[in-house]
Image (cartoon, rainbow, N blue to C red; front, top):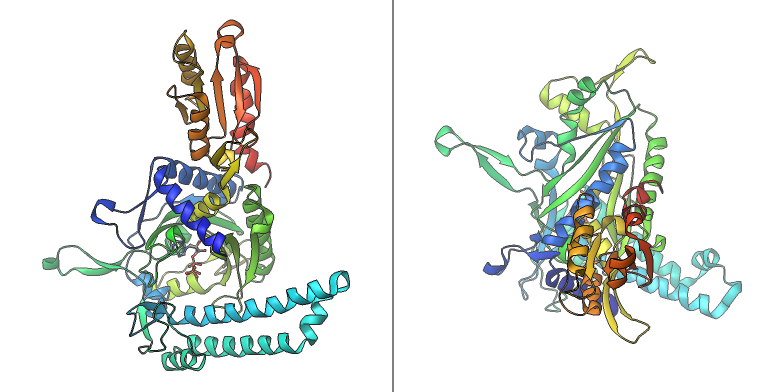
Length: 513
Ligand code: ATP
């Protein structure tokens, strides 16, 4: 665990030092949980977006994309339930003056118990070796059963308190579990209060009678309110999807862990409209599709897992997360939710407009059901960065920090490097660069020894370096160095573009889906 926390620190420091992510308005000491993407970070982000957009929109005939505004009519958020229920229960420790999410304190306590339970299982696995039957052990071992019973009881109480908005019960639970503040170590808690996560602002001048409006806390509602516009103008037939990438804003109570939990972040969401009754089939379909998308990145299949929601939101009939093994442990990266007809029905009610589809096969109109996939762009960025970051000792004994970013996502695809800064090599290198730059983000670098230049490219994750040497002038060949293996191949300049295309194109990922 210590190593993993170390990894997060290293990733944060590396991201800053190499122009990926900066704290927002840093010259004024930054702003809590708000970050800026630098010269390489914005490229990486754009490449992730492009892979998602192509995978969802371009590769599916029945999915189209939109770009809705961040500001929406305030009634939108009444209908969606965000005005009344987009709350987190918060609690302060009176000694440390630190603020926590009350439900998260309880969940962390449950996680500790789960850790103890799993330790028992691991101990037994070691003791019994090959003959170990994990399922049987979990069903029969007294200590494991005790832990499981405790976990179930706490979960039940947490769910009941959260579902019914019983803040006093939540406080009681924290007291009964004797949860202490990690900073002060004390149990001196305030009462639990509700806190709405939406940011509000005013539209129009105050003199005109300004209206309170919200910065959208999710992009999904921009899709729901445009359901009919898109369906009619695109002549879409059920089942079909609408995709969108855009900013969302949440006034998170505790915003720690770098870009994992931000107050301004970006979501990539797709709402898939289906015939009522078909939703479970599509839910399973999208679970598989989305997991394939993640696996195509090659960050390691073991780093992902499904986590089924035990406490379903009242409008959902199935929901799960795809969790990623972040440096802080397995945490939500993407949500896949079967949301029934809750949102469209709510908008029908509040707008007075019919939001239905006439199904020619059924010869009737209905409000479609929705299966949504909702992934955080910034969390995907963090997943890529933390899996890519590696410190290595090379064969010659030298050390390097390398970002093994999937080539198709890398900010800079190719670095073009003349071996020396004379003898016509820079000119030859520039010729190659001028040809490649139409297709790829490239860099030219002639400063310092070639080894140092390779290190610089490794540190920003450039998958390929093209080196021009004296031989290049004679026979028009160059070397192509692979970032991960550090192996070099010699090839003719006229074959270079094609070769690079096969290595770095986003199609290498899309064909895996
Ligand atoms: P969490 O439980 O971690 O707060 P959530 O369940 O509220 O997340 P959703 O509302 O399902 O998240 O949002 C969909 C996706 O948006 C999440 O899977 C996550 O990747 C991303 N996301 C949500 N909140 C944030 C945030 N504050 N910062 C960065 N990404 C976020």
